[in-house]
Image (cartoon, rainbow, N blue to C red; front, side, top):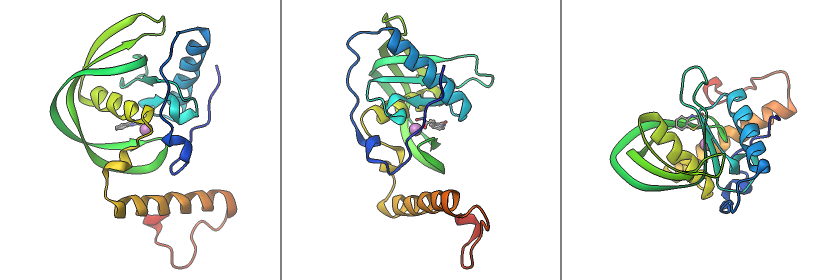
Length: 183
Ligand code: GNR
Ligand code: NI
């Protein structure tokens, strides 16, 4: 297994629309295992292949408390959805930002499993939110796209600043004029 690097907003590669997986092979299964390792290490509750710069329709998720419910979906399609749910979302590609987003409350998803077998599953609550979030990644879409341009601009600045601080100046962390809550 290998831990993969996660692309961060505003990396343009996050805008790639992922291609359908024509055949589920050992390579697909290795990708899934590496994605799960990367997701658990982050830690996160979901990960789309797009985020690790692989532009195929593959996502993983695990919303359990103890990492005991790994789920991998290939070529996922939402065939039914119901209800509205607003919940706070975060994204490993948009570190340390949490904002409310509207999603369907219940979804029925058709996908292939890791053996290439067609499956149908229902999800609600956090898992439903997570799957919708991951499926957006496969379309090159990020949760910040649902926010206002002003909020997105603030988020870009905050991430750029955090990245600058991480790469350029190990110490000091705070510079005159900086507000700690915006670092
Ligand atoms: O770890 C994650 N948590 C999360 C919380 C609320 C809604 C969606 C998510 S997905 C996110 C991991 C991630 O970025 N997946 O693409
Ligand atoms: Ni995400």
